[in-house]
Image (cartoon, rainbow, N blue to C red; front, top):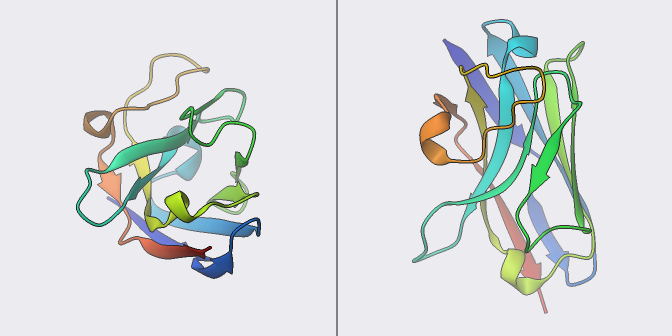
Length: 128
Protein backbone atom coordinates (compact mmCIF):
# COMPACT_ATOMS: atom_id res chain seq x y z
CA UNK A 1 0.00 0.00 0.00
CA UNK A 2 1.01 3.55 -0.68
CA UNK A 3 -0.52 6.54 1.05
CA UNK A 4 -0.37 9.87 -0.75
CA UNK A 5 -1.11 13.23 0.85
CA UNK A 6 -1.21 16.40 -1.23
CA UNK A 7 -0.68 19.90 0.11
CA UNK A 8 0.02 23.39 -1.16
CA UNK A 9 -3.23 24.22 -2.87
CA UNK A 10 -5.06 27.46 -2.34
CA UNK A 11 -6.43 30.63 -3.88
CA UNK A 12 -4.15 32.67 -6.13
CA UNK A 13 -4.59 35.45 -8.65
CA UNK A 14 -4.03 34.86 -12.34
CA UNK A 15 -0.33 35.06 -13.12
CA UNK A 16 0.63 33.84 -9.69
CA UNK A 17 2.39 30.69 -8.57
CA UNK A 18 1.81 27.74 -6.29
CA UNK A 19 3.86 24.68 -5.42
CA UNK A 20 2.03 21.47 -4.71
CA UNK A 21 3.62 18.71 -2.68
CA UNK A 22 2.71 15.05 -2.44
CA UNK A 23 4.12 13.10 0.49
CA UNK A 24 4.19 9.34 0.09
CA UNK A 25 4.39 6.61 2.69
CA UNK A 26 4.18 2.85 2.59
CA UNK A 27 5.98 1.04 -0.22
CA UNK A 28 9.42 2.33 -1.27
CA UNK A 29 8.70 5.65 -2.94
CA UNK A 30 11.62 5.52 -5.33
CA UNK A 31 10.18 2.47 -7.10
CA UNK A 32 7.15 4.38 -8.39
CA UNK A 33 6.56 6.53 -11.39
CA UNK A 34 4.48 9.44 -10.14
CA UNK A 35 1.99 11.78 -11.68
CA UNK A 36 -0.31 14.74 -11.16
CA UNK A 37 -3.85 14.93 -12.47
CA UNK A 38 -6.59 17.49 -12.07
CA UNK A 39 -10.34 17.57 -12.20
CA UNK A 40 -12.45 20.67 -12.68
CA UNK A 41 -16.17 20.74 -11.82
CA UNK A 42 -18.19 18.92 -14.44
CA UNK A 43 -15.11 17.67 -16.26
CA UNK A 44 -13.21 14.42 -16.38
CA UNK A 45 -9.96 13.93 -14.55
CA UNK A 46 -7.08 14.88 -16.82
CA UNK A 47 -3.36 14.24 -16.87
CA UNK A 48 -1.17 17.19 -15.92
CA UNK A 49 2.34 15.86 -15.52
CA UNK A 50 4.33 12.70 -14.84
CA UNK A 51 7.82 11.78 -13.75
CA UNK A 52 9.89 8.60 -13.91
CA UNK A 53 11.04 6.83 -10.77
CA UNK A 54 14.45 8.49 -10.82
CA UNK A 55 13.29 11.86 -12.08
CA UNK A 56 15.17 11.46 -15.33
CA UNK A 57 12.13 11.73 -17.57
CA UNK A 58 9.05 13.93 -17.42
CA UNK A 59 5.88 14.50 -19.42
CA UNK A 60 3.45 17.41 -19.47
CA UNK A 61 0.02 18.10 -20.84
CA UNK A 62 0.16 20.65 -23.64
CA UNK A 63 -1.96 23.03 -21.59
CA UNK A 64 0.72 23.34 -18.90
CA UNK A 65 3.97 23.00 -20.84
CA UNK A 66 6.34 25.84 -20.09
CA UNK A 67 4.39 26.85 -16.97
CA UNK A 68 4.44 23.79 -14.70
CA UNK A 69 7.44 21.77 -13.53
CA UNK A 70 7.32 18.38 -11.88
CA UNK A 71 10.14 17.14 -9.68
CA UNK A 72 10.74 14.60 -6.96
CA UNK A 73 12.96 14.08 -3.96
CA UNK A 74 13.21 10.38 -3.28
CA UNK A 75 15.09 10.99 -0.04
CA UNK A 76 12.02 12.90 1.23
CA UNK A 77 9.45 10.61 -0.42
CA UNK A 78 7.91 13.67 -2.01
CA UNK A 79 6.91 14.76 -5.49
CA UNK A 80 6.30 18.40 -6.35
CA UNK A 81 4.43 20.39 -8.94
CA UNK A 82 5.62 23.96 -9.38
CA UNK A 83 2.89 25.94 -11.10
CA UNK A 84 3.73 29.34 -12.55
CA UNK A 85 1.77 31.82 -14.65
CA UNK A 86 -1.45 30.33 -13.39
CA UNK A 87 -4.65 30.89 -15.34
CA UNK A 88 -8.29 30.69 -14.27
CA UNK A 89 -8.64 27.54 -16.38
CA UNK A 90 -6.10 25.85 -14.10
CA UNK A 91 -8.72 25.88 -11.36
CA UNK A 92 -9.34 22.29 -10.29
CA UNK A 93 -8.73 19.70 -7.63
CA UNK A 94 -5.22 18.38 -8.14
CA UNK A 95 -4.45 14.74 -7.41
CA UNK A 96 -1.18 12.96 -6.91
CA UNK A 97 -0.88 9.38 -8.13
CA UNK A 98 1.62 6.52 -7.96
CA UNK A 99 2.15 3.74 -10.48
CA UNK A 100 3.33 0.21 -9.74
CA UNK A 101 4.38 -0.36 -13.33
CA UNK A 102 8.00 -0.44 -14.36
CA UNK A 103 8.87 -0.21 -18.05
CA UNK A 104 12.44 0.99 -17.83
CA UNK A 105 14.17 3.78 -16.02
CA UNK A 106 12.58 6.44 -18.24
CA UNK A 107 9.03 5.16 -17.97
CA UNK A 108 6.51 7.93 -17.33
CA UNK A 109 2.91 6.99 -16.72
CA UNK A 110 0.34 9.34 -18.26
CA UNK A 111 -2.97 7.44 -18.31
CA UNK A 112 -5.26 7.06 -15.31
CA UNK A 113 -5.30 3.26 -15.64
CA UNK A 114 -1.51 3.16 -15.29
CA UNK A 115 -1.77 4.45 -11.72
CA UNK A 116 -2.62 2.34 -8.71
CA UNK A 117 -2.70 4.76 -5.80
CA UNK A 118 -4.29 8.19 -5.53
CA UNK A 119 -4.27 10.98 -3.01
CA UNK A 120 -7.37 12.80 -1.80
CA UNK A 121 -6.61 15.93 -3.78
CA UNK A 122 -5.93 19.57 -3.05
CA UNK A 123 -7.98 22.47 -4.37
CA UNK A 124 -6.35 25.08 -6.58
CA UNK A 125 -8.41 28.16 -7.40
CA UNK A 126 -7.11 30.84 -9.75
CA UNK A 127 -9.02 34.10 -9.78
CA UNK A 128 -9.10 36.41 -12.79
